[in-house]
Each structure stands twice: as C-alpha cells, then as structure tokens.
Amino acid sequence: MTGVVKVKHSSPFKANWWGRFGWVLAILYAIYAANFLDVSWTRFVAGLGNGADFLSEMIPPNFTRWQLLLGNLLETVQMAVIASVFGILCSLPIGLCAARNLLPNWVTWPFRTFIALCRSFHPVIIAILFVKAVGFGPLAGILTLVLASIGFIGKLFAEAIEEISMKPLEALRASGAPFSSVIVYGVLPQVLNRFIGFSSYQFDVNLRNSTMVGIVGAGGVGGTLFAAFQRFDYDFLAAILLSIIALVMMSEFMSVQIKKVFQ
Amino acid sequence: MSEIKVNTWERFTFGERMARFIVFFGFALALSISLRTVEVIPEFLLDAPTQVADLLARMWPLDYAYYPQGIHHALMETLHVATLGTLLGVLMAVPVGIMGANNIVRVPALHWLAKLILVSSRSVNSLVWALLFVAVFGPGPLAGTIAIGFRSVGFVGKLLAEALEETNPGPVEALTAAGAPWLSVFVKSYWPQVAPAFWGIFLFRWDINVRESAVIGLVGAGGIGMVLDTALNLFYWDRVSVVLLSIFVVVIVAELLVTNIRKRII
Image (tube, rainbow over all chains, first blue to last red; front, side, top):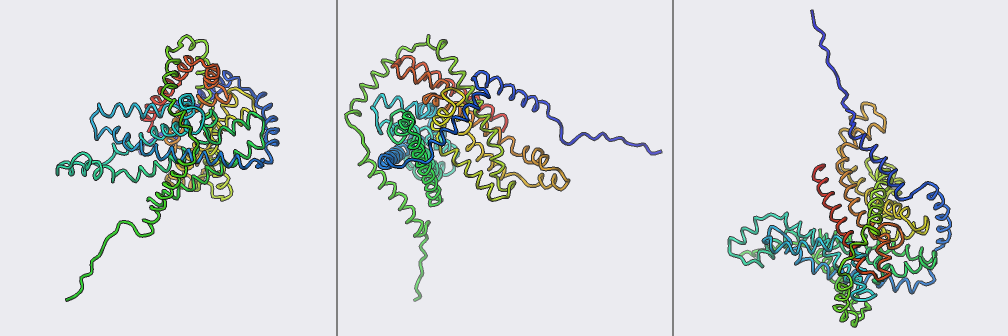
C-alpha cells in the first residue's frame, strides 16, 4: 500500500490583509481631509471653467515689456551667483566644524544646531525676516539664499566627512601632522569631489529659489511675477513663467556640464 | 651614453585642466560682474542692527493666547493640505513614473512625454503653482492641495522611474514566461522590488510638503501661511513669532517622524 501524501500548497502570493487595511485607511483619511478642507467636486468643476478662462487670457504670452523682464531675470541670476559663492564659502568651514568624527561634541553641536535652524525654515520665511532687517531689494534675497545654502551644503558636507575613511587621518596624525594638515591632506581630498557636486546642485536650487523670494519683496523676478498676478496681467504672467522655466532648464543643463568637468 | 627618458605623470589632461579653469574663471567673472552691478543700498545694511533689535523687541513676548483662537485650525489645515497634496501627487506620479521608466515602456514618444511632465512640474516653484491654482480655484486650501500635488509629481515621478529602472529583470521574466497578464507582472514583480523605495520617496516628499504648505498661504492658498500673511500685514509681530514657532515645531516633528519611520522600513 502506498500512502498518498497530501501536500497542502499555499498560494505563493499571500494576501496581505494589513496592507489592504492600510489602503482603506488611506482612502478614509482622504475623504475626511477633503471634508475638513472644504474640497468638493462642485468647486473643482467650477474651477475648471475658471481655468479655461485663465489659460485663454494667458495665451499668447506678452513679451512687449521684455526690457523689464530681462532686467529682473538678470537680477535673479546675480542674486543666485552671489549667494551661491558666499553660501558655499561659508558652508565649507561650518560643515567641517559640524563633522562629529573630527571634532569633540562640544564644538560640533552649536554648528549642527545652526545648520538645522537654517534648514528648518522655508526660504520664503527667512526672506520675510530679512526684508524687515535689511529692507526691500536683492540684498535680503541674497542673505536668505546664503542661509539656505549653508543649511543644505553644510549638512551634506558634514555627513560626507562623517563617512570618510579614517586611515589616512591616522597615518597623518601618527607622523605628527598638525590639525590643519590633517584637514588639507587627509579630509579634503576624500570629500572635495562630492562637495563640488553639492555646490553645483545648490547653485541650481538657489536660482530656482531666487525666482521666488521676490514674492515677499526680496528682489528678483518674483516681485514682478506677483505684481503681474495681482493686476490680472495674465499674458505678461505667462511670459514671465516661460522665461523662468527657460532659465531653470538652462541652469540644469549647465550644472550637468559642470559635473561632467569635475568627474 | 643613452638618453634617459623621464616620464612625467599628470593627473589631468590639458583639456581637463582647461575645462576646470574655464569653470572657475566663469564663476569668478560672473561673481565680479554681479557684485558690481547688483543694486544694494548700503544705508539699509548699516541700519540692519537697529532694525533687527526692533524686530526682536516687537516679537517678544510671544502672544501664546492667539494659538487656540487663530493658529490651531490653520495648522491642522496645513497638515491636511500637505498630506492630501502628497497623496494626490503620488497618484498622478505613478503612471508618469511608469511611463518614464525605459525598461517598462519602450515607446520613445511616451518616454519623452513623461520627461516633459516631470521637468515642467519641477521647474515651477510650489509658490508659483499655488499662485496659478489660486487664480483657477479661488483662494483656499483646494488651490493649495492641488498646487502641492502638481509640484510633487515631478519629484516622486522622477525618483520612482529611477527605482523602476534599477529593478532586477529576473522575477519579471519568470512571471512573463508563466503567462501572467501585464497587471500581475507589475503588482507581483516590479512592485515588491520598488515598494521600500516608494514609501521612502513618499515620506521624504511629505516632509518637504509640510514645509512648503506652510508658506503657500502667503499667496492665498490656505493653511498657516494665510495667518502669517495677515499677522505680517497688520504688523502683529508677537503673533508672527507664535506662528513661526508653531511652524518650526511642526517641521521638526515631521522630520523626526519621517526619519524614524524610514529607519524601520528600509
């Protein structure tokens, strides 16, 4: 007699009830939040009609005031360039001082707090405070972008330093090198390439942000954009938007090229 | 006597050195031109310390009593705008991301369409998106939610497409060979491989959106930004400081939450 062995096959793809429950919860949340925010289908549909009007007023874009537009874009680029250079120069020492594997904790924590503070506020909020402190104009925007750059590059640079190999540093220390030589010959060669990568990315980000801080009066093309919006000057608004997109794409292309040079 | 040929080793070729030089020179030139032509009014800079002292004096003491009556509801609104906007963005980003992954969709035209959508979503700032949608839907959180969603599409879609392109083709081939339909192939072979990355991207974007939804109110798109704008326009600096403090707390809490969840799932 041969016994028939019954093998129970379970499906290789098990049903994940917790996962399905999670999806249901997400849908319920979406309905609740939509109610909370007073988001309704009728408003949405009414908006679509407005949207059609809005688009028809935007087309064709009005480039007749191109001199004003060009001047504003130039100011935007100037702000981005100045802020990037100073932001990068400041974040080099600040990032170094925030790396926990090089310096004792009592040195790093003030710098890390400073970086966290720079990062936690949106550039627009920082711009509002700087507009109050140094008045309307590009200077407020530049200071804002410098702080934003320190927040971003400083953090990434500190993290990059914390990941380096400690062996060259030990070798340098063992041969009696002073701290500055340890930094210049042990740390920087290991992280400089990544630092350049972060910097070219940050220039890109600064250019994008410098088109926006003008909304609160901190210089650049954002001020004109907001004014055009408030005057219902939608065809000029379309022209500004198109030129901002062109500018951002150009800078993205340039930052790719710069990264290629340094690879 | 034979001549001794000495090899000199150089790290970079002449072309590479020139390229680097051009980049640095270009930046130095741009900086000097910018510094000379930018319109900075020095009197304003000299005046800054007194202005900052004045600002701090006006901000202190904080008007905590304003939190329950004016801020709490707006803060909740901001969080809902961020979350709902992220959900909306992800919902729109999944098809675009699939279209953009060149190992799944092999039609070049669709691929370029996806690229175009992703780039245009990212190159318009969230404040500008908010402006546009305020014009379309009128002031309020609806415009903000949709703006946050549209802004998120580019980010989530790009990262999702990259994650999909990095998947191992083994499980996909196995399922295709067994005759599974397209949807099953996607759900059972691509999805399990990209799920951790997907949730990571989702959380990361949510964290960014919490920050951004706090400011889009400045152009009328709902949330705590509108409270901030009102307080600023009326020069209630003690209320401004409470608003800033509450934004700060929410942002920090969101970041801590995201880092902890990410540690668990990745």
